[in-house]
Length: 250
Image 1 (spheres, rainbow, N blue to C red):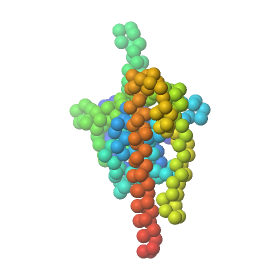
Image 2: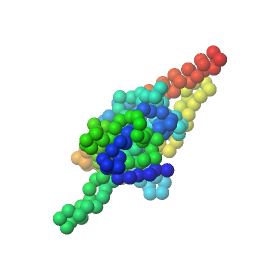
Image 3: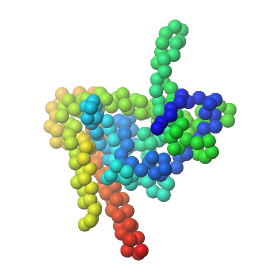
Image 4: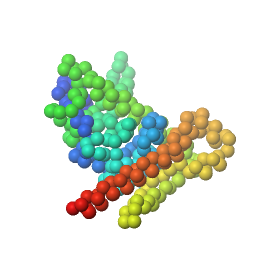
């Protein structure tokens, strides 16, 4: 269970964060949340989908990492085999929140960073230091702060973008029914994507409205990311082949 505290350079002066990857750090997962602010990076290596919350009806973006809930095909020998690390992973044990502060008699909401002290990456022995010996932010913490800022902006901006897509009927169900070889396959449900035909059929006014709001690019990036499914399938087939070879050798 998470145990968050507001990050400060006194109580957490010796805090370190392990930046290796593996099942022990919670990285064996089939998908992670994604944010529109990072679509331009994600599209190069990950397939981007949407999911809808059954209770609230709200949408979110996700990137697919594998074909089951605990399969991450980007994990390899303690490394994350991709040039870009999704923000949700790169943030590590940190969250950004808001705290009210009285400034000259006026309450203002200020962004603050919290750290989960029970996160498996958090320790006081190995990994990246969070603070410098003199108390300043380490380069690692500066990077995490940038990531958290992108996540915050992506969450807020994404809500309006998803509503715009939904209002135009662009978000539609996607079912992945995949055969890897004669004995293995996968069926992934609960995913949503941009309907290419519906987007192409939009009238000029609707297209212009999406473009003016900055959402049209997001729609095209989501569609373009589908070519990364081939990369995932190839990696899955490679691993299945390796397992079969090992079994035959044994």
